Each structure stands twice: as C-alpha cells, then as structure tokens.
Image 1 (spheres, rainbow, N blue to C red):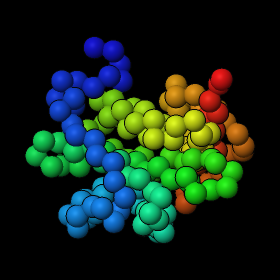
Image 2 (cartoon, one colour):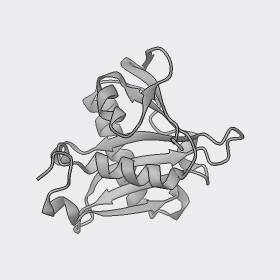
Image 3 (tube, rainbow, N blue to C red):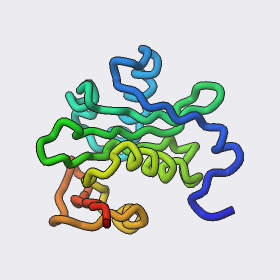
Length: 160
C-alpha cells in the first residue's frame, strides 16, 4: 500500500459534502464535537471553535463517515463569494482513532476539487507545512499564533 492511500476499511468511508443548513442535528453535533474534542481539548487551546463561517450558505463541509455513521474526519471549504475569487480550506480534523490512514489526504483532494480553478489559501498548523506542500501549497507569509498554536499562511495557485 502507498503511504497516504486509504486502506480497504477506509475506502468504505463515505464522504458527504453539504452546507450546515443541509445537515441533520446529529451531524451538526458530531461535527462540532469532533472539532472541539481535537482543537480545543486535545490541543489544549481554548477558543471559539464555532464561528459564522460554518453557517454561511457558501461554506461546504466535507464529512467522512463510517458505514455505521461515526464521523472519522471533516474539513470545510469556503470563499466562493469573495471578490478576489480565493477559496479557503480549513478546520481539517481527523478523529484520533482514524489518523494515519490517509483520510485527511482524501478530504483535502476532494476539497481542492470543489475549489476548481480558483486559488486556495489555508492557515496551516506550522508542523504540517511539508504535508500541505504535497498538494501544491506554498508558504505565503510569516508564522503567526492562532490561539497558542503556531500557524503559517499557505497558498495554492493552479499552474497553467
């Protein structure tokens, strides 16, 4: 198996794209629970995890679920309404039991498909800079703290 490729079990994960308004209440609960468990509790970074970007009609949430309905990973895509045409990927989050299986890679690729020909920006946790480079992202500014976590801005422009 190639590193980063899903295992046969992971291939059974269903990836669904929807706005927050299209989700049922249990999906919204699972989305917020996973993100708060990882970003606030696990990373010990108290901040307002739930923001207005989530509910914006132009935001698409990707949810990777097991056949039993467990949320394994998520990310959000937004920015289609921005005048500069720049799209954004954010809140890339994988449940601890599902890490190291290429699920985040699968979600990033799907998110980039949704961005089409637009440039894409991310605020990456600094230790993941090399990982995001595999998708064509490059640093586009200085490091900064988001909460207490070192981040850096990255951008992907299509070559063409």
